[in-house]
Length: 233
Image 1 (cartoon, helix red, strand yellow):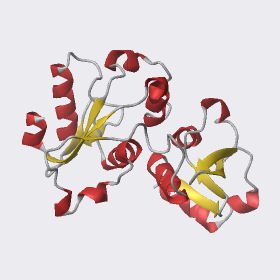
Image 2 (cartoon, helix red, strand yellow; image 1 turned 180 degrees about the horizontal axis):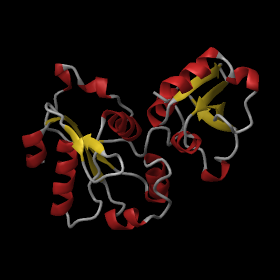
Image 3 (cartoon, rainbow, N blue to C red; image 1 turned 90 degrees about the horizontal axis):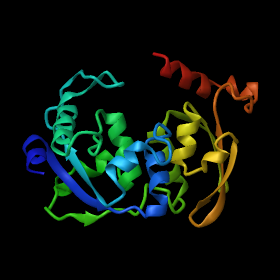
């Protein structure tokens, strides 16, 4: 924490405890399927409570690093590597390396956005408080807006239809969207899913281009065309 405070502005610190029976699934949801259930990372890191430290980088510096992302915030990457070496190597430390990843991790872990920490009143008071007992949506969704935000931070999407009992979206990464929405792994191949929103049954329809479930007339809409054009720039 002293090292973090010397490099970054600490905005929040939460001690997160995930129930053991759900820990593996929670990790799978957080990593969007890149981490399978009961992965080596889980055995290496353990399943005890962990700290989530929210920081602001006053001097972000983007540069190439040895990571699949290539160019990342070198300051957070270097801090992550330094802290990993202090904890015996491996992957006991996770860090968000760009704004997109930060929005995703922050919302999935704490149900908050980066804008929530931009006001002067968002300064950390030095107290470590308890965080949620699972990623956002672990016990159902408080609202459709919360569900949409979770999908938004997970993958680019287009809203196709929204009603009181149903939400239909076209997503770029179908598996990541389904895991984020807390859809069981065995049901990811389906388009229509029954979930809970505000304690009531709700239909979530996930579609992706080329999956054969979306009518060609709707794919030709200006909104969908604009979405894919913007993504290829």
